View 1 (cartoon, rainbow, N blue to C red):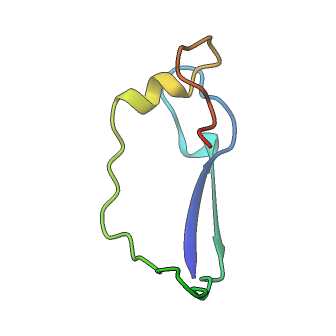
View 2: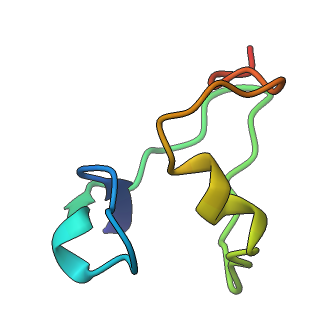
Length: 64
């Protein structure tokens, strides 16, 4: 099972657990020419706090 942590709502002040949604999903099987990686460590940088704000930014929200 994969654990997924999503931003549920934009925090006002210090983020709390209620600002996030935690769920699980089945682990996908890799297809031809794909690789399945296991994440061991995740870095949550202070930069990400600014991205939680609903404010204009020079950085696009979704990178394609």
